[in-house]
Image (cartoon, rainbow, N blue to C red; front, side):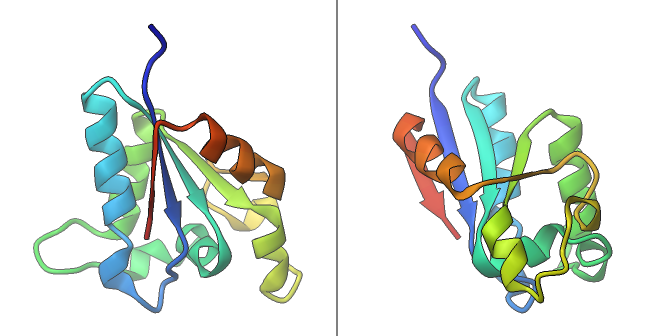
Length: 123
């Protein structure tokens, strides 16, 4: 039987820090449950994985968002960034502007991920 897949879509940006931790924590939890997680960044969500932004976010007793992102990547969870959304932000964001280990992909990728996933969650 094929492994179950969960897709987490981050549409909230750095201006709503209380919404940013959930996809990473849930993806790490899914992996521990032997479910294949992917996080896709869309719209304002691309600001979350822009280099230098996650270091600025820390809420309560949680580690910094950068630490959570680093752990997510260390565990091998895919972080995919919508190329078209990156272009919305001044048209100057390139793959080099995003955290190491993430990947910029086209819009069709999101459609395919949704079709392949056993469940999706949007933040």
